[in-house]
Amino acid sequence: MTENWQRGGFGLYVHWPFCEAKCPYCDFNSYVSQSIDHDRWKAAYLSELNRVGSETPDRVLTSIFFGGGTPSLMEPSVVEEIIKTAGKLWPFTNDIEITIEANPSSVEAERFKGFQAGGVNRVSLGVQALNDTDLKALGRLHSVKEAREAIEIAQNTFERASFDLIYARQNQTLSQWESELSEAVAIGTDHLSLYQLTIEQGTAFGDRHKRGMLRGLPSEDLGADMYFATQDICEAAGLPAYETSNHARTGEESRHNQIYWRSGDYVGIGPGAHGRVTLNQMRLSTESFLAPGEWLKSVEDLNSGESERDPLDLGDQKDEFLLMGLRMSEGVDLSVFDFSDKYNEINNLSELGLVDKKDDTLRVTPQGRPLLNSILARLV
Image 1: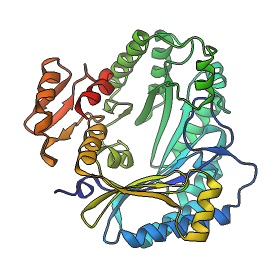
Image 2 (image 1 turned 90 degrees about the vertical axis):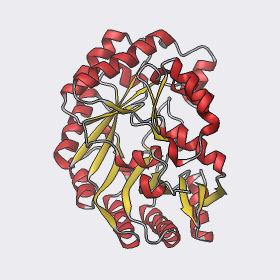
Image 3 (image 1 turned 45 degrees about the horizontal axis):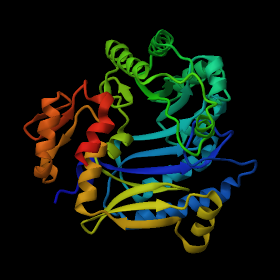
Image 4 (image 1 turned 60 degrees about the vertical axis):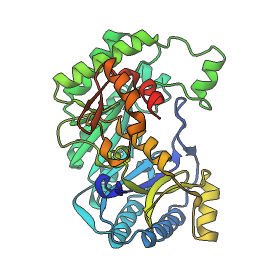
């Protein structure tokens, strides 16, 4: 069986779990802490790097991604040491992508210069809205002015810069979103991540919604109209969707996320980090302890922050291959696995105009993209 990581690439994900504040819509593994011992955390990250590096020799590293939380709150020296250590464990591709996520409220020009000097060459900014009223409603700590300044600093500091926006927000109209997205495109970015607001259980928004206190959410029809407007505006600006929520100029796609979507291998270190790694012809799913204190103690006492490691059987691998790969505009190569048991359903979806199959390539059509979850539910 083809090992997909050889085609999908090999990446490193580093999770920094701390934020300045918890956003009400966020269900990521993030925490607010008043005091952080950066030296202690650096030692733990380097210990984990050496552990996973010893298991994965002879790999070539495609990307490193510092996610969170708000990893731009890390000391630049910690980020630099992680990158240096990764370079000793694995050779880098010539065009390795090294990304750090940042919030505009934590952006300082000197700090960004420190990250850039340490090896970071791409930044992803969590802007989320270009409207001060909505930024406040989303629990963000920055203003539109600070967001624009952060984008300018990022574009002047790093080789590549991207930023995120959330749409289908409370009381947002279609024309307001069209105007805001046009404003974002005019800034001159080469990559945009554009997400519909989703209400997740266990978040502040989720609790409010359960009590009927989260008013002004758009109808499904309005959400769909916003989605199609997003495609049209970005396409016209030369930023077509290469994945369900991500738009980029050709060559500016996120290489790290493509590892996930193409079923490559990636090791995850840090609290709550997940991984997929192929060892001895077996694809493994790995998870780390969620709580920062528990993860840190496990690394220090047991030399591992990993909480679970499970082999994925062939059925699980096939399902993940479709779940992740069909998010991409390029689709999936059906020759990787035996999908003959799916062909009747694929033909049914094709007759409805929701998917397109040519030779061994299966793609979701533009008409099918808003129904991606329903399509996947029929295939996996």
